[in-house]
Image 1: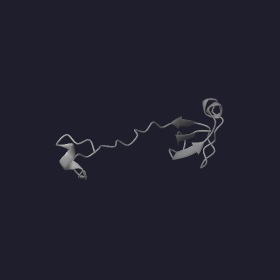
Image 2: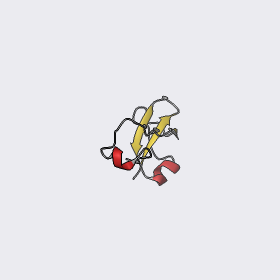
Image 3: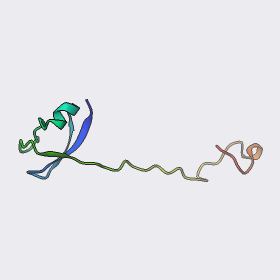
Image 4: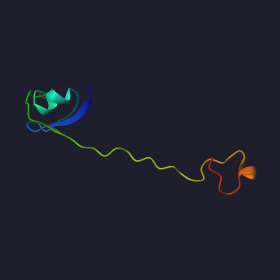
Length: 70
């Protein structure tokens, strides 16, 4: 069962709830706080990971050269 980030339209609180896709699509999931079945899915952007260049020195830099992939 997947977890969904859901916002209650009645009390405006956000919850991360583990439910089946069928329960979610058929609106059979109650809000844990107020009991309302009016929940909407929240779409969040996943965190971006940026590889920094030059922070780690290659132990074989002399033999690898300037285009070292390490």
